[in-house]
Amino acid sequence: MSLLVVGSIGIDTVETPSARRADILGGSAVYFAYAASYFTQVQLVGVVGSDFPAEHRALLQSREIDLTGLEVADGKTFRWTGKYHENMNDRDTLEVHLNVFGNFNPKVPAAFQSSDFLFLANTVPAQQAKVLQQMKKRPKFVAADTMNLWIETAREDLDALLKQIDCLVINDSEARLYTDQYELLRAGKAIQAKGPKTVIIKKGEHGALVVSQDGNFSIPAHPLEFVVDPTGAGDTFAGGIMGYLAASGSVTRDSLRRAVAYGSVVASFTCQDFSLDALKKTSRADIDKRFKELLELVHIPA
Amino acid sequence: MSLLVVGSIGIDTVETPSARRADILGGSAVYFAYAASYFTQVQLVGVVGSDFPAEHRALLQSREIDLTGLEVADGKTFRWTGKYHENMNDRDTLEVHLNVFGNFNPKVPAAFQSSDFLFLANTVPAQQAKVLQQMKKRPKFVAADTMNLWIETAREDLDALLKQIDCLVINDSEARLYTDQYELLRAGKAIQAKGPKTVIIKKGEHGALVVSQDGNFSIPAHPLEFVVDPTGAGDTFAGGIMGYLAASGSVTRDSLRRAVAYGSVVASFTCQDFSLDALKKTSRADIDKRFKELLELVHIPA
Image 1 (cartoon, rainbow over the protein chains, first blue to last red):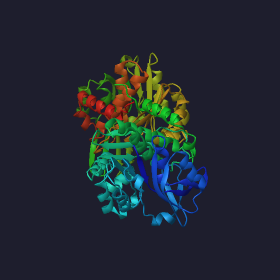
Image 2 (image 1 turned 60 degrees about the vertical axis):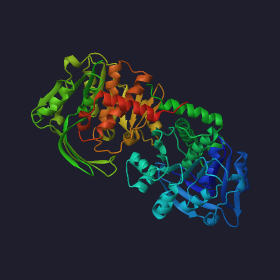
Image 3 (image 1 turned 90 degrees about the horizontal axis):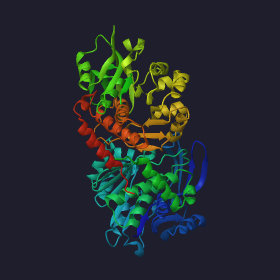
Image 4 (image 1 turned 180 degrees about the horizontal axis):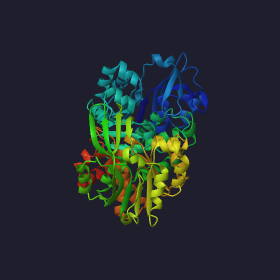
């Protein structure tokens, strides 16, 4: 089934303890769409400036991502510069230039307005809600991401959005901030009480906890010997989940679990290089192979 | 099969953000033995002072723990006072009084010297090695715990011990300290290269990673809505593992995975109250019920 993502497209500069890479492709919608493209055709709505390199556009097209909703605005593309600490989990944002993303008013093309699966990548909650309003029919499954900034500055809008979505994907620290509950099970349940039937709490290197009406689910991250750059891991995690769900056509207890596992696998590849460089070398067969390894990693014989 | 544990027996005072409990039963061997007693008969070697309350001894006997190796020395029992931070994962040791544990020279009773399973709870590595030397035959499976203090002050003795054991159980931060590797998979492999075929890395609320010749294994902690006191969680985790393994009689890929899952379950009960108070109310049936829930929590349909 069709999958639509609305979110940021950016040019990143990333510094880790061992390396630095300037002007690389990033943005939540880009990471999400690339990850989801292993499973289904993706429709992307976003904005770039006139400086957006043709090679990046070509890369997305090579994955058959539908760029009908890619707006090119006068000005520069969104830019983010970040620096990771020694543990590769914590990072500081050094610079943010919203540029054309600052005035972005997402317009969902007519051809996308009947999509069955919708992912509202992290942005102002009121804007996420406006995207949902543009849909001709209520999608089968709507998921959203958010961040500490909106929890702190736009909580009412976020609460309102949560009443309209099926699933929230959120970091552990943000789930704690949003609910004032330290234990993630309680935090997840508190978010669930705000609306979404499913809450997926991302725990970075520790995997994810899914609080769901169909039973809670815990999954570790695929253990990596070397993490090069975790930027985009959360977005590719969500992309793998939504891509798999859209491909399978329905959200059941079993398809959700498999989807989260696929998301975890795609995210693990993302961390093995900067930007989309590791994913560019990753085939669907590679993903399926690691999915089987993950099944093996978590298997407890009854 | 028989299971022997050698370790500390203590009186603890524990402060958490919401409560404080003075003079409660603690110590690594106590927690370990109580947890293992759900699965098999446990032999305990340790020392207490003449002030050790009869009720604590009776509690251990009520679990059919063999106290033939419990030495009563002139003086006071080992005492520890700790304070947990808001997140309940980090803690500060406020006071340690080794008392009779400071001069403890463990003597393994003749009846225990042929035990098949041996757990060397956390203490000076040279002393752990001396216990192993007292065994009439090499046990089928020897596991040990350690801590940052010995990694920093007795590394050579610890390295020597690792050549003689089958399994090391260690915290994530200690595994990183010991190996100077941040990624736990690399840390586990580095420890494995020092001797033990199996390395169980404890990650607190995030569960555990098992690096093993029979394939790596990752398990989450049973998610709790309320953590009252995590003291003893690591020791009861190890106790559940070793108890289950001793009961099953052999260490295979499958029995090790089930054992780690049982360890995780017993540890989760431990966190639900101070000292052994939650376990005292927990039956084997309760443990089996939560074991099934854990299987369900991690299950990914193929």
